[in-house]
Length: 385
Image 1 (cartoon, rainbow, N blue to C red):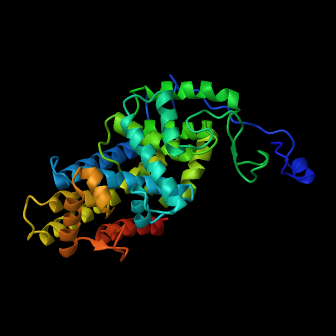
Image 2: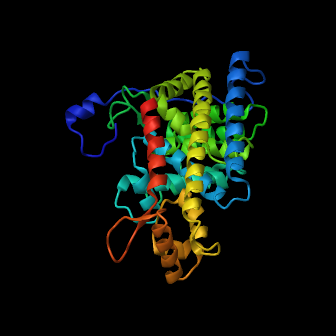
Image 3: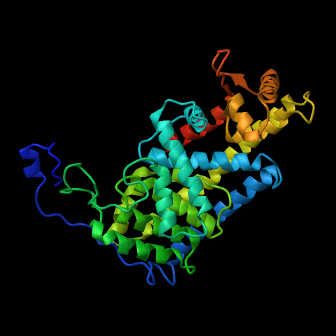
């Protein structure tokens, strides 16, 4: 067990002894289910992929490819996925605190941590076309920016289980640190294959990544971001479906599936990803429709404002960032302070925004309707779980 001077002699005695670290299966060239899939699993994966494709098309068609709200809608879907992925790691934050953290107005440590996960997801989608070791390390560096070990493969043993002092009795003892580089080379070679269904490919790659546990911290969130990078890079999605929300609804089944994978059975993790994908497509579609309806209602409220006013440019941005300040609008839209203030006044007078601080300086405006829809979605996920 680690000798850090903090454990008692009795604790050191209890934590001393032999243990077995995982040696990951070699994937490149001989992945599970290649070249054929059991017919029932193939149908399950195909149905889930079709559901994701339909969700993606609906999200684009609901607004129109040229609508200025499409980018903010994609941003809020990504943020929703990031929040769910973080919640799997017991990092829970409401929509308001997360939106405040995005503009550096939150004191919540959890919110700042989830924003780091948002940055990780953004990096994953940017790097989706070149998933090499440099890209994976870059994802981890975004997630744990400023922390020791960020963006570097671990050099120590890690495990998941009963004790933080010793791997004895752990649920999973990851490979020894010296085995990690070779395991990652094998995984990255596996990512380059093109003979597997995309969702199955992502599910197995994710399970292998979690088995390797290449970092001392942040493996789960980085691994789920990697899965999304594969869904984007291999052409299944252009937006972000809240797959982690689906995993969160059956969290024990997800963790059990990872355990089964380490024991040699890949089927449960593929089934869990297929189930989570169907959940993401169904509930994500309803969220897109609700946000689109909110935007249409806001446009009606703003009808009396002249069409060239800045308020109209701000309106779609509120889907992706439902809490704003004058300074934020100045930076994002490159406008003078007075112009930003005028837009906020018009949106407030129209009933779209509410000033949330009651102060005369350092004021913050929020869109209560969008925040409520996001919190309702999070509550739905919790109820399903």
